[in-house]
Image (cartoon, rainbow, N blue to C red; front, side, top):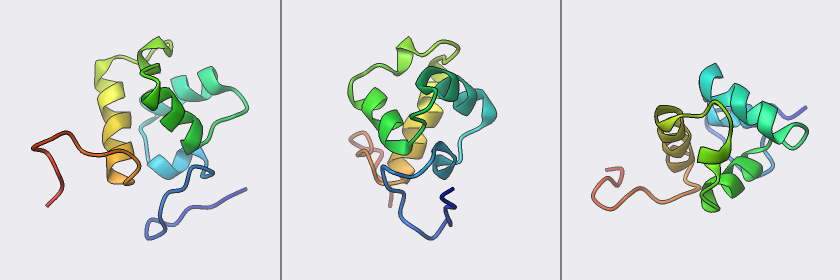
Length: 84
């Protein structure tokens, strides 16, 4: 099992827990992805605009997942909302 430390960069191979999501965001992803629950698989869903297809993920949780991917440096922040 891979243990992630907050100071380490988040890699695609990291388990879902590396993103620090709430249970309300993480559980639907675990159910949807079954045995491929990695940051890379979540990123693939985000890149393909498929997060809204995950059962029990509403707009607020999708925003939470997007924010976690931005914080991890895996996706760019929306224009005008870059980290300072």
